[in-house]
Length: 193
Image (cartoon, rainbow, N blue to C red; front, side, top):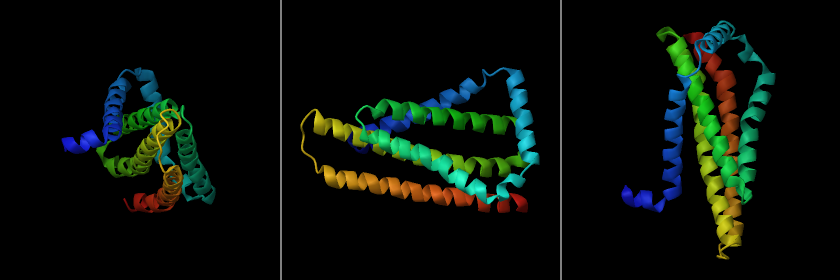
């Protein structure tokens, strides 16, 4: 295990930073004033009472755009040399938003809505995993470009760029599947329960 961690320092550093920021943002959620928490609780209850928005075909297109646009931006930032900092900040902000959703849903809903909470958080969690891996690949590609440009090391940049492009198309296909699952299968599962 330690040998693998030494070999993939960037991956494990990024994973540790992500988990640490997730835990910190959970604790920061406790600092939000009670009047804001009660307003969020009211919004969650309104959302639970109105589940009919899932059945529109227009929401599918909006979901694909909403999920694929950040992936494309992260991928483009990986091509630039200065994109590492922006990638890191963007991903950590996504973790912050996801952890706030988790805390508010679990703290303001009863156990009877556990299946709904689980299904509601499933797609954002899978999307966050996609963002994690794309952020990692983008930072790795940026570091490789820095090595090529500044340190004048020779790499097969054409094949690495082609693989980097294949990763983008694979992740866009996964986003398409996640949007299908989110808008067509989750409402069926929720209606069963």
